[in-house]
Length: 582
Image (cartoon, rainbow, N blue to C red; front, side):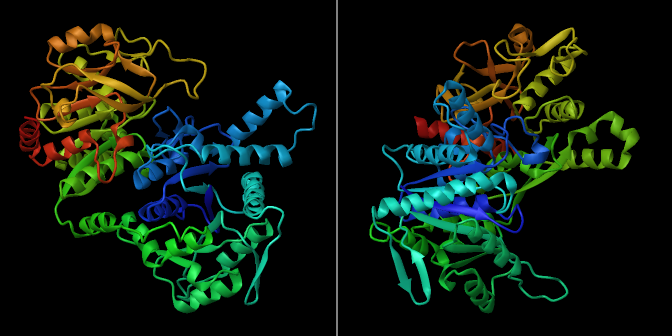
C-alpha cells in the first residue's frame, strides 16, 4: 500500500479536506485506485453527538457511521462509498486499546501511549486502507490520509508519532535489512517509495506591507520536522498566486524542492482545485515519490474541467429559501448545499441560497426583532422554492411550520428532509385536520395528538449511535407518484437515514383521507419514508437524507425535482422520463 499523508499548519480551516479530496481526484484520473482515511484527534468516538455549530454537519455513511464532513468531500470528489472505520478518532483508538486491556490481551504489560496507542493507530490504518471502497475487488493502489487539526496540537501528538513510525516502517519494508541514504546535491534523505507527505500551510499577506510572508510556513515545517516527519510537497494556500521568489524562499528554508511547492490560491469554485494541482504537475511529484510513474497514466480530467468551467459560465440562477435551525454556520448543511449545487448545475443554473433562520419567521420575532421578521418573510416570498432540512430540538420549529404552510397554500415547491418531513405532517394535521395541538413528542411530550413519535427501538438514555442510521430500503407504494418517477420508475430506493422520531403509524389513515399521501414506506410498511401532496406542483417530504448520496455528475433525484419544479420544468422532465422508459 502507498500512503499520501496530508497535514496542516499555521491555522485550521485551510482546506485540508478539499486538498486531500483533490489529490484523490488527480490520482484517480491517472488510472489509480484510491481510498481515503480521515483522522480526527478529538476524544469523541464519532461526530454523532457534536453540535453542528461547533463541528459542521454530521455526515452519514451507508453502514450508519456518523463521521466528519470531510468524508463527504471524499465521497463526492473521488466517488467512493466509505465505511465508519475510514474515520479514525482518538476516542475510537483509546476505546479499542482499553477494551483489549480489560480482556487481558496485553498479558499484564503496562499499557502506554507508546507503543500500545501508536501500534493501534498503525494497525487501524493498515487494516482499513486495504478495504475496497470503489465497488471493485481487492485493495486500492493509494490511501490518502488527512490528519485533522494543525501540527503542534497536543491531541494529535500520538497520531504524529504513529505516522512517523509508519513512514519508517514502510522504508524498512521497501528495503528490508538495508539502510539507504541517497545523496542528491547537498541533500541527504532516506529512500521512501511508499509514503508521501504533503503539508498544507498558509502564506498570508500583511495589508501594510503587501508582501507574501513565508515565516509562518517555515515555523510550521520546522515543528513538523522536529516531530520526525519531513514534507515531500508543500501545498500553500494564498489569496493570489505565489510569486517565484516566494517559492524559492520556501524551498530554501523548508527543505522542499521548488518544483514540489504547490500553490492553491483562491479559485471561483472548489472544482478548480484538482485542475490547479494537475497544472502544477502535482501528480508527477506524488507518483515519483511513490514510484508509480511506470503504471500511472497522464491525468484525464476532461469531465472535471468541463464541470468547473460550466459552472463559471452560468448566468441564470434560481432562488432557494433554506429555512433551518443552524443557518449561522453554513457548514452545518454542507451536503444539502452541495446537493443543491449538483442539481442546479444539471439544470444549467446557479443556486442562490437565501438562508432564513426559522425562528425569525415566528410571531414572537415580529415583536422582539421586527426588522429580522420582516426580512425573513420577504426572503421567503421571493424564493422560487422552499427547503426545510434536518435538525434536532424545538428551537425554530414554529417558524418551519409557517414556512411549510406558506409553501403548501401558495403552491411553492417544497422539500422537507427528515425533520422537514415531520414538520409538514404537523402543519397538515393542524391546518387541514383541525388538530390544533398536533405535534411531535420531541417538542411536546404531552400532546393529545402525537403525529410524530419516538421510535420504539430507540434509546432514551444514550445519545451516540442510537438513532436509525445508515442505508435503508424504501419501497414505493405506487408508480404513479412524482418521487417514483424521479427515481426512474424504480420499485424501491436505498437512501441514508439519521433519525430517532417517525410519523405515527396510527394517524396515517386520517392523514391520507385528508389528501396527504405516503408514497414510500419501509419494508415493514409501518414506517413512513416519503410523503407527497398530489394536488400540489411539488410538495415532498422524506424521512431519509438524499443529500448524502448526491454526486457532481449524479445529482440527487429529489433535489433535481425541487429545482425543476422551481423553474417550471418538472412536468416536461417527467414526460421525458416516461417516454424513455417505454
